[in-house]
Length: 469
Image (cartoon, rainbow, N blue to C red; front, side, top):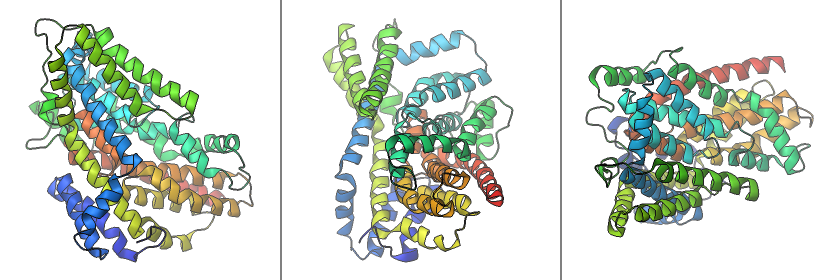
């Protein structure tokens, strides 16, 4: 199979099966596995095609990178708990007697601050604030929503992130854009037109402040947490195992220095990630987490924790992160299958004949949203849609950078974030569920209504803009 071609309508069935089964059975791993096997059979590869597909999907630098990132995240969270760092941070916040609304707003602000990595943000904010939000009875679903909606949506509207560099790089050579500086300038000008990302971030602030009341499944989750004290649904399956959530501090009678055991590792992550982005043009997030884990492991030994206990804690961290890793394994596999079957190409083929200057931003946003939701990848969506939609926008604009061009670029970016933001196949959605320690499908179910509302608003604005061009 060749990703440049498509097998037609059949190509959308594997991701569709995965998503429907995931919401129906609430078992994401099983649903993804079934969808992969069915897709391989549909493609005529036979059962032996399944292990071959997994080798192709997982035997690459991209999966190795996120696999190692997850491992180091698990180890660091375990170290935080074994040293009592999370408990110390919780005690500091708790002593302030902040209200439920204040805690929610603080979580939102923390997500806005950690803008440089959509991988780091949801795990860091979720694992750091979880005990604090638990204490004021904010549901884990709400915490995951806050973490998720301040990761990818923020990263794509800040012009100094890896997202900006990636999208800008795709624009070079289109119309009058001939170099990196011109591409970044055009991307920056398109940010105000990225209505989905901007409104997604604003909606979190409005919801956490109470200006907009919770609705849909999130309203039920919040009511359950407040009235029954149940932070997660009965019989739910949090996307983080007990090995990682039940780690007690090593010293029961004292908590170790929060400066060395929490703030210094976090500062190290930020310095390495931001420093490498500025110096090398790419944030070395995985390397930052590795350095922080090694640093904290050394600090733990200096503070008197035995080497065997440190290693056992690290292993518990790895075990605890495995549920998320398994979902990533099958998500990458089904994404590879979708690419081979030409899922995105099929969606483009059935819609490109409708395009005209007025409808281009709206159709582009809708198509990018469908592709990203069905494949779980925003960057993959950017790579597919920008080479198709942006040259078409320039042709409508006579080669100039006008509103149609800027709105089309923003529509691709916003539509790509939509799926990355709420698809059960998305790695950042998985990381948000991991950080909040909540059932992955519960997180998706409660977040999708908010995403859809913002998506509809963005779509309507793009349609209105189309009437003006």
